[in-house]
Length: 109
Image (cartoon, rainbow, N blue to C red):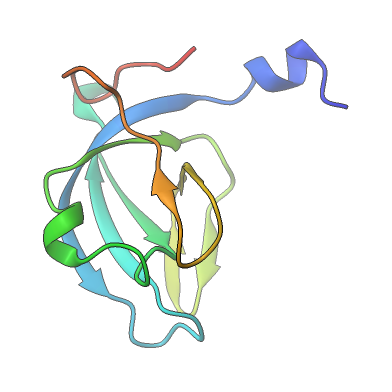
């Protein structure tokens, strides 16, 4: 089990996807996303395996919940600087989104 202190170390923020590109070198269907987290954090690149569930048009402009303080991970040559949160399995993935309009960079608690 994860204790509350460990959970509270995660920095989960709302970001706005401003561009979506195919990640051609990835083994699985993935996108390279540019996500704006507002003035405090800025623009981040996030690699996400949601290509089978969402089109580029679906994602562009979407506000999403992401963990922004994970160690960067290089995925098929692209450094992913966070993790977009989603529920479900490939073919039935639902990205976690706020149900009201909140500013980029808003902390999730």
